[in-house]
Length: 157
Image (cartoon, rainbow, N blue to C red; front, side, top):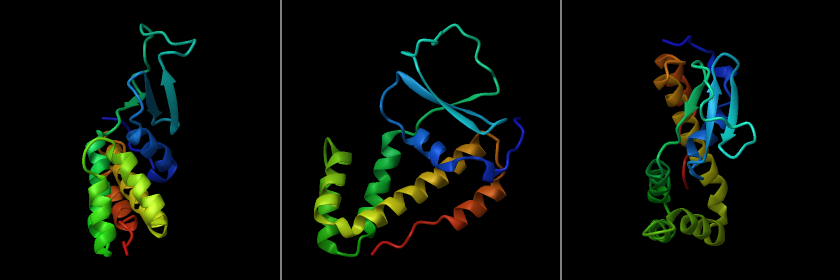
């Protein structure tokens, strides 16, 4: 089992970004729990060598599937108290291009909700990042619970 690390020493924003990265399968993020450093690697880098021995202490961060992040948009839209806004945001999530449609609808029609959405999305992403650390055996459950309690979803108007 890996050695436990201090949650305060981890850049939760960067880990959350890595877990959300859906760009392609030609690059990947890694995390070195000994140093707390993240790295972004691509098979197109000059020094890429697929046969290179990888340090077993360095963890590859596999992004969570898009349906996880999609559900955050659904949950947010369902919590919006303005029925019309809620309906329109939920409708934007139907079909292909849901992420783009949701963002367009939110930014163009409900700019007053943008900062609330960003705080909502960030709180969820940060809690998932801490859950990932728990799953990797790097942070204990009690630290994760305390973090989750301190980083709950913000109220949605």
